[in-house]
Amino acid sequence: MRILVVEDDPTTADYIAEGLRQEGHAVDLLAQGRDALVRATTEAFDVMIVDRMLPGLDGLSLVRALRAAHNTTPVLFLTSLGGVDDRIEGLNAGGDDYLVKPFAFGELSARVAALARRPQMKEAETVLMAGDLRMDLLARRVTRAGQDIDLLPREFALLEQLLRRKGRVLTRTMLLESVWDIRFDPQTNVVETHISRLRAKVDKPFEHELIKTVRGAGYRIEA
Image 1 (cartoon, helix red, strand yellow):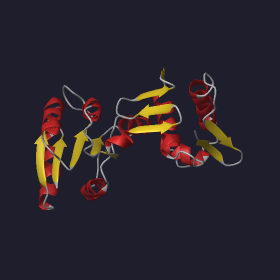
Image 2 (cartoon, one colour):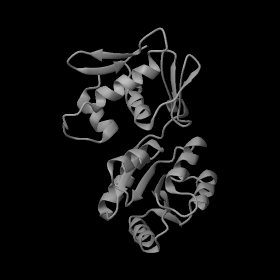
Image 3 (tube, one colour):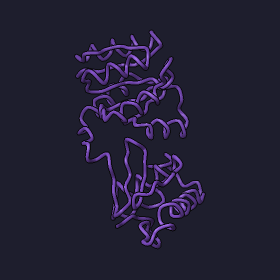
Image 4 (tube, one colour):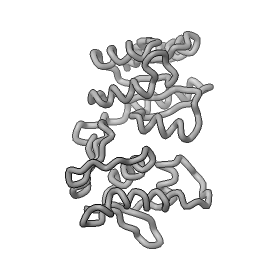
C-alpha cells in the first residue's frame, strides 16, 4: 500500500514510517497540513494517517477540505485528543477511524489494514435521501423540499445514522453507541431530547412526518 503520514512530531513520524515500511508499505511523510492537502489531491494514496494538531492547516480542516474536493481516501486520525467529543468531531469531519496517542504500533497497523480493505465511498453514497429529505455528507448540508435545514453536529450525526439505515429500527442503545460513543446505559434522555429537536427541524415545518417512533423498540426514518 501507499500511505501518507501527516505528523509534525519527527519522532512519532519516523516511528510510524519505519514500522509501516518494515511491513512492505510505501510511506510518504509530511509535517504540514497544507502540503498534505496538495499532495493528497494530486497523487493517489491507499490510506492517510493524520495528526489533528498540525501547524498551519490543522488535521480536521485538512480532511474537511479533502472531502469537499470529493477525495475519498480513507483517513485514520492519530491524536492525543481522546475525549468522546473529540472523536465525534474527527469522524464528523470525514475521518474513517480514530486512534489516540500513546498507541501500540500493532493496533495502528491493524486499523490501517482494515481501512484499506473497506470499499471506498462511491460518489452516489455521499448523498443520503428519504423522500424529499436530502443529506449531502461532503457539503455537510441538509435540505427538505429544497429548503436548508440548519443542524447542530450531533443532530446531523443522529440524522445520518437514521438515513443510513432507512426503514430499519434503531434502538436507543444503538444510537447512544453510534452518535455519542456511549457503550453503557447512562440513564439519560439525551436520545429522546435530540430526536425531539430533530423532529422540530426536519418534520414539524413540513406536511409529512419522516421520523417515526416504534413503541418499545426505537426510531426509524421512512419516506
